Length: 109
Image 1 (cartoon, helix red, strand yellow):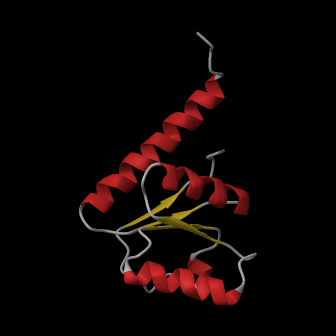
Image 2 (cartoon, helix red, strand yellow):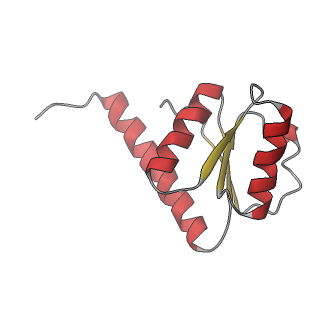
Image 3 (cartoon, helix red, strand yellow):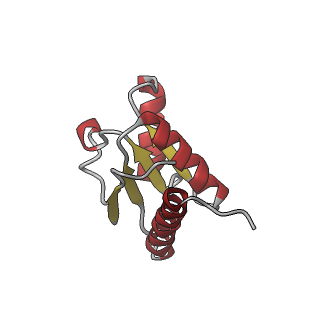
C-alpha cells in the first residue's frame, strides 16, 4: 500500500472536514461562503465541491464583471449553494443572508 505523506494526509482531512461542514449547512437549506487566499485555490476547491455533488462557483478578480454579476445573482437566487473566492467581503457579499462563512488560509489543494 502506498504511503501518503503527512502533509497530504492533512490536506485530505481538511478538505473532507470542510465538505462535511458545508453539507451539514446545506442540509438545513443554508448557503455557504468560503474565502481562500488564492485564485487557484478557489478554482480547485470549486472543482472538488462539484465532484462531491455541491453546486459551487468560484469568484475572483479575473472573472469579467458581467460574469461576476451573474454568479452573485445565482448565489442570491439559491441556484449556487457555495461561493468560493478571494476577497469576497470586499466584493459586496456582506449583504447576503449567509449561514456559514469559512476561511481556509492554510489549505493547499
